[in-house]
Image 1 (cartoon, rainbow, N blue to C red):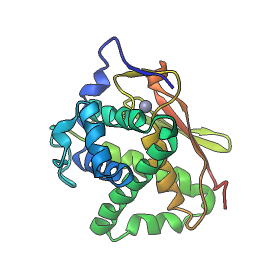
Image 2: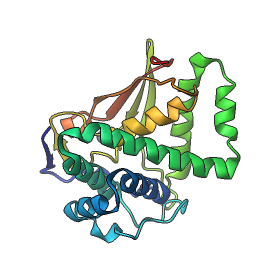
Image 3: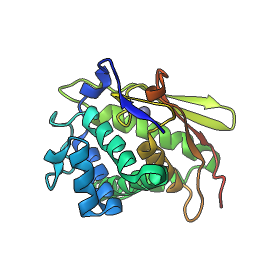
Image 4: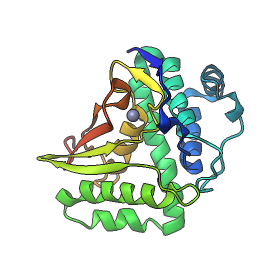
Length: 226
Ligand SMILES: [Zn+2]
């Protein structure tokens, strides 16, 4: 896998990221890399200002942090782990999603997951993705502007989630999809809709870093692994 900074400015890098989401990604990274591993990663990614200085939990979008920094964390982790990076970053995405949903459940009393699990199985993935989209459009707002562009598309047995403003890869070029943090995020969130040992198949099939107009994840509508 080859990843290099983009020659031309990528406007997505300037979009402000949700503080809590960045915090959960850093906490999850630290859990998987260890404290020292994260320090090394942050230094090499030009993000040493985050060492022991994570964004606030659930502070909305303060405007202090950008998707460009989030992508540098993702790419920094891929460099840190080398060849085994893919599965480690999926793991980080999963832990990050757990941390986020713990916060959400603390705020809403796990009402959301409970409601989704009352739906017929074939509807849960679609409703779950619609909720992700709703949440990002509702809460990832900076100064009254909602800058994230995303779509959900039916593809037969699968659904596609298309993100034109992906924070995992903005500012970078690569020869394969690199947005594993979000692959893990989707895997964990959708796993939560079906319960123990039941996994939805999630795969990033297109990536902005490869020149596509959006990062696209395809997911099965039902669990593929029991
Ligand atoms: Zn991406």
